[in-house]
Structure formats: structure tokens, C-alpha cells
Length: 310
Image 1 (cartoon, rainbow, N blue to C red):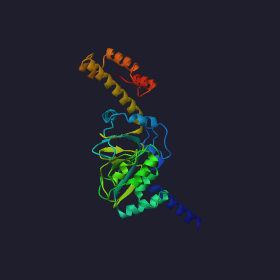
Image 2 (cartoon, rainbow, N blue to C red):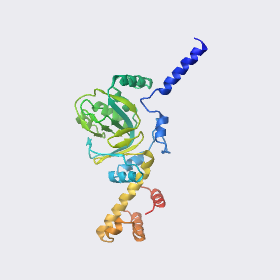
Image 3 (cartoon, helix red, strand yellow):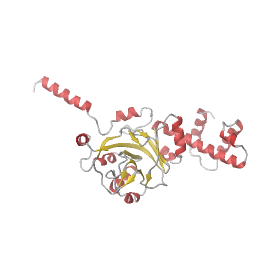
Image 4 (cartoon, one colour):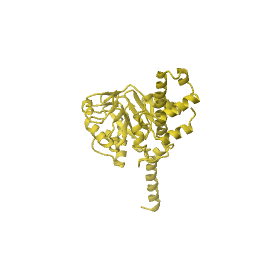
């Protein structure tokens, strides 16, 4: 083979790799999608929101989180009307996304071939691939276009694998099988559209850690999810810490306001409008003598009030 032929072959190979579409998004793509996050990241590029913030987020109400996001211009982050495996157990975590589509043979062939080049498991179905990359604190979020019969993404075997890796659960715009078995996995939870005894058929995984849509919510890899019996909110990673403390302070303000209204110290109009200097001082004194442990540190509280107008 002469030099010209070798150079041509190298060019064709390089071009093929340039245009190949990965099943799993590259770290560079995920970093570009989540460029506003300035903190630590996982090796796959997803933002690494702290475990402490994830734990505090569990105590935030859906309404508080929704309001904080709306105030930042994020109006498409909430979805409701779920079947929940354990309704009284809230779940927070860092999102891993997956997109499924109705099966098309040529696309399925490409996905499996590309998955092989990415060293993804070749035994079993492609629905195990997102599970293989989970780490502790992850929530597996999949759009399977609401398919119920023959659309079951997991059963109790995969459910055990998910919980073993993530210590969390799933949010599926689709269905599961063996819900009874899934409900027996201590600590596992799921927000799903339905359940059915059938196996997954005629559908295909097409992407991992790319943007997806869950109902009316837009979800990016590395988002933080707050899932409760009242619905699910997907929070951009760069907003979650501010959202948590803003929501915590709002809850404290409400607690203080309700107390003073019951005592008759202030009128509803005074509490519902911008607070007077008298009420502000009363609130700060109440915080200083709060009967219990505040959810935030004093430094966080001081910084919050320093940067905000009452």
C-alpha cells in the first residue's frame, strides 16, 4: 500500500469517527450542556452536587422549589400524575438520563454496534446499559414515551441492581414489571406511568446522558431531582444550592408568620406584604432563639440576607 492510499484510509477513518454518534454523551458535551456549574464533576462530566445538599433538598416542598425555579426563568421543570412505588418516601439525587424510542431495525443495529465500541455489555438488552454506569446518589431517569404494555424497562432483578449501585430508584415516563418485587427492595423507589407483567419489546435505547423530555419537563444529565408524592421537579445543578437555602428561609419565614398571626401580634396584611423594620428585627431575633436546629449554618444565613432585599 503506497503512502497516498494510507493517508486516504486514515482520512476516511478519522471522518467516520468525527461523525459517529455515541450512545453515551461525551464528558465534553455534558460539560457544555451544564456550563453554568462551577463545582466538582464526575468523570463523565456531570456536576457533582454534594450529598449534604441532596439530603437538605428532601425537606423542601414542591411548591417552594417550583417557585424558586420560576423566579429564575425555569418554567418547564415540573411533572405530576405519577404512580409511585413508595409514595411517602421522598427521593433526591443526581440525574442519569436515557432516551428510548419505538424499535427501528437499522437504528437498533447501529446502536448495538456503537455500544460495542463503547465497551457496553453485549449480553442482555440495551436497557441494562444506563444501569451499568450508575453510582451512589444517581437517579435513573428515562423517557420511554409512556409505553406500558411491552414497555417495561425493569423488573425486580434490574431494580436490585439499580439500588445496589445508586441507593436510589427510578423516574420513568414508561412502565415497570414485577412492581410487587420492586416494592420489597428496601430503600428503592420509583415514579412510573404504570406497570405490566409483559417484557420489553419493540423499543430501543438510543441515548444515555443526553437531554430528554419527561412530560412537560426538560431534563439534562446532572440535574438534581426532587421527587415527592406531589410530583417531580428537575433542578439545574448550578441553581440547587441557592434553591435549597432560599426555600429553607421561605419555610422559616412562613413558620414565623403563622406563629405571629396566631398570637395576634401582626395583621395578615403586614405579614403578606413587604415586612416593616419592626417585623424584620422580630424575625431575626426569633431566628437567634429558634427552638431547634436550623437547616442551614449561620454563615449561610448571613450570606443569604446580605445579598437579598426583604
